Image (cartoon, rainbow, N blue to C red; front, side, top):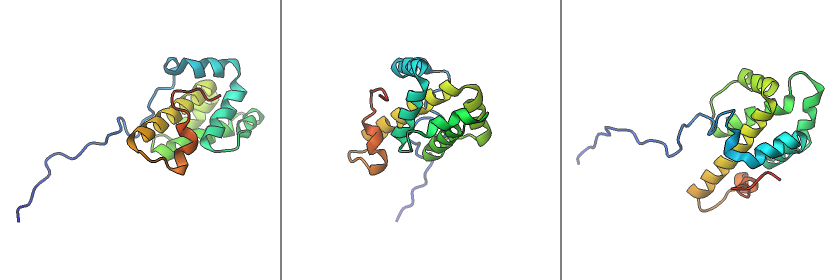
Length: 140
């Protein structure tokens, strides 16, 4: 029996594991959602929350405090689900200072992850079933 020594470890098929697939200010990558969010942000946030599987009315709680709880919870949830590096402090900062941009980034992340999951797997799981219909579409 011969033993093979692995010289190079296999790389992940997902680029930039542990990072958001788009930057916070990269709204131009999805102009439809950008226009939708800028015209009617409350409805947009409710649609994104619904796509994740949470209560669609959750973002309405964001107007009662100086720290938006729904935005904070959604960013933390998406980061945890996809293994994206970050902290509650960064989530809080983006939720407070870059509220619309934060929701747009969450939306782009959900779409891209759903699309990459659908292309890498022929069978869709229940976890992604609500998101796979978002490929190339707006969250309307």
